[in-house]
Length: 394
Image (cartoon, rainbow, N blue to C red; front, top):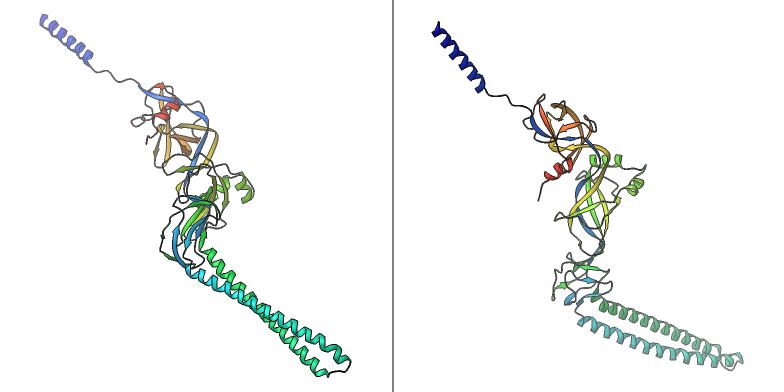
C-alpha cells in the first residue's frame, strides 16, 4: 500500500513538472497601423521632351567664295546684322571697278548723245522759218528732223546703257556686301563646322552655323492616342482651344533630375496623329531669362494631376493577388483583408476610390506574413513619416 502511494506521488509530480515545462502559445504581435486619411494630392505624368530655341536659323552664304575670316566663336551671343564671316572679294572688287568704269563710259556717251540732240534741234529750229517763207525746200527740213529723231534715239540708247551699267555695278556691289555674312537674327551661335579657307556657296548642304534665339524655348513631347484622349476627357473646356487655354502650368525636369525654375504653358497641339509613331505632339513654351537652357537640350515634361480630398494609404499597406489589390483592416485587434479600388499611386501612396473609409484602421507595413484572422497588437504610426522613410534615395 505504501509502495502504491509512492508511485502515485511520483506520477503526480511528473505531470505537474510537464505542465510547467509546456511552452506557452504566442500572443498578438505588434503591427504598425494608420487611420485612412483624405488628402489633396498632386501627382505628375512625365513625358520625354526635346528642347528647341524659339527660332533656329541656318546661316548660309549667298555667293560662292573662300572663307577668309571667322569673326565669332561657338556659343557666342550675337545680335541681328552682326558680321559672322568674311569671304574672299578680290575678283568681286575687280568686277566692281569694271562695272563702275562702265557707268562712266555710259555717262560720256550720254553727254555726246545729248550734244548731238541739241545740235539737231538747233538745225531744225533754224530751217523751219526758212521753209515757211519758201526760201528753202521742205526736204531739207525733213532731213533735219530725221537727224533729230536719230539723235534722240541714240540718247535713249545711251541712257539705257547707263542703267544697265548701274545695274551691273549694284549687282557686284551687292555681292561684295554678301561677302560679309551677317547674323539673320539675334541669338546663340551653334557649331562652326567650316573654318578659314573653306569654299562655301548657296547650294551647300552644310550650313556655316546655326543661330538659336533662346530667349524663349519650346519643349516638344508626344502622347499616344489613348493617352491623348484620356487627357482631353480630363481637361476642362468644350473645344480644343478652350482645353488648351484651361490647362495648368507644367514643369520641366532636366537631364540631371532637377526641376527647371520656370514653369511652362502648353501652347499648341498638332492637329493629327503621326501615322509612323501613332503619337500626337504637344508644344510647351518656357522663358529662359538666365540663358540656362540651350537648343538641343533634353528633359521630361511633368503634367500635374490633382486629386482633391482623396483617400490615401501607404503603398506598403497594399498587396496584390491575381490582379486584385487588398489591405488589412484592423477590427477588434484582428486583421481582415478587404479589396480596394486603387485609382493612382503617387509618392509611395495608394489613392483609393473604394474599399475602405476615412478613419478606418489598417495595417501600414510588414504585411508579408500576415493572414486574415490574425490577432494584431496595433502600434499607431504617422503615415507621412512612414511614406517618407520608404522613399527611394538616389
